Structure formats: C-alpha cells, structure tokens
Image (cartoon, rainbow, N blue to C red):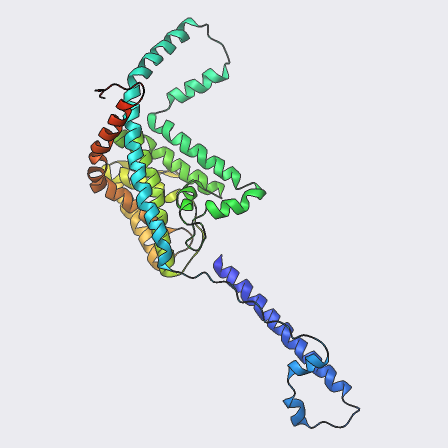
Length: 361
C-alpha cells in the first residue's frame, strides 16, 4: 500500500514538474515573439535574462515547487511510552484476574443456592412452548465454560467490525483501532486494535481459531487467567510489531486479534504437544500440536526476515513466543505468586461493609 502511495506521489510530482517546465517554456516563447519586430537582441542577452524576470514583466508569478511528501520519522524514543504501557497493562491484567478469581470463589456458594432455587421454580412453573428466552438459555447452558468466555470476545469483535462500516466513524477507527508506531495515539490502540478487523474473512478466521481452542485453554488455566493472558498477549504482540516496524523503517497500520490468538494457540500446543490437530479444509491430514507450533513459528520468522508484508509477522511471532514463555516460565513466575495481592484484597474486603473480620475463602 505504501509502495503504491509512493508511486502515486512520484507520478504527481513528475507531472507537476513537466507542467511547470512547459509553462516556463511557453512564456519564454511568447516573449521572444513579441520582441521580434524590435531591435535585434543578441542571443547572449536572451540567455542572460532569467525566466523569473520575464515572468515578472508579464506580471505572472512563478509556479510553486511541488510539496514534498511527509515521511514519518522513525525513532526508538517514541517506544518508551508503549513499553511502559505494555508492562503496566500486563501487570494490571494478571492482578485484576487474581482479584476476579477471588470474587468468583467467594460468590460461588451463594450462586449455588440461587441456582437450586431457580431450578425448583422452573419445575413448578408451567412450561411455555416457543419461548425464545428459554431457547436462548438452553443454548447458553449447552456451551462449555470456554465457549461462554470467548463468546463475549467474539461479540466485541463483531461490534467493532460493524463500526468500521459507519462512514462517520472512519477517522476515529483509524486513529484508535489500528496500531501504528508513527501515529499520534500509541498506547490505547495497542489494546483496541486486537478487537478490530476490517475484513470479514479476517474476522471469521480469527474467531474460528479462538472458538476451537477455547475449551482447551479454559480447562487448562481457568477463565480469569485466560483473559489476562489474552489481553496481555494482544498488547505485547503489538509492542513487538512497533519495534520491528521502527527498526525496519516500514511504518504502517496493523489491526487484528492474530497476535493474541497466536499466544493462545502456542500455550495449548506447548502444554499438550502430542495433541492431534487438523486443517478445516483438509481434515484427513492430521499432525501433532508441537509440529504445528514449530511450523507456525518458522513461517513467521521467515516472513519477518524476508520482509513479507501481507501479514504482521512480528506481531504473530511476539504473541506465539509470549504464549510459549508463559506456559514454561510465566505461570510459575506470575500466577503462582499472586497470593500477597489476593491476601491484601481479602483484608481490604473484610474491613469493608458486610465483610467479616476473620473471613476466608
């Protein structure tokens, strides 16, 4: 896209130069014709007359030079704020997930009695045929915990996709829902762009992969830890893309949830390397999850080195490496050391209204 834009600018600048050159030649030619019936002018004197002086005699201003296209400067200093945002957001994500898990465990007993009461009322209450709400509830209850969790993510992505179709929101979408290291807005687009898809095929492919791996990843780490991993991977993969674009000088916008989904896929494949996977269009060919992960990492590495620009290979590779790192080291380093934060939150909740002085979970 940027190459096409450069060709257009070059063509526009060339046409303007030709137009300016022909304009100056035309004025010189007309001036020489008008001087033909006067005293003969020596060729040297005609050559000494500058085109600018001739144009001034004709009361015509010289044509302005074509504007030079704006080229965004690449500077690693602009990546300081995105780096701080990445570290801070990742810490807040896992901290919020730990508090969310605490609150979920604390309210599970109360919700159990509420569910028992609701089931008893459903049995006593006469059944309605064709009740849409009941059918939706039945469909929702038939989903696994992982599918229920990613349904909200899919809904947000679908809503943002619809916003791209509103003409009055185009400027806002480009500014905040595409990540670009040369943009004025650097930090929040790192998160918002992970929910943004401009192509229906891109949206469908990403959401299908997320739906396929949802049950495995939720059973492996729970919905709270999964959400922290997913959101953090989206921001981290975008930061890796920032660094790659700045280093290579290929500044341009990116969007999509591929970086976060690559972290989910890499985490599952690292935890269960012997699991069998298959391509949707070729279900007869199966391969292990470990081999699939190696192939994906090798493909994105080659794309990054060779400069392929169809995908944001740096973001894909950053998300995959973060998923692998988290399963091998991050879980022990981050999630299993959340106890001090949970205890601090527990003491704060216990001192609050309605909390016991020595309550525990």
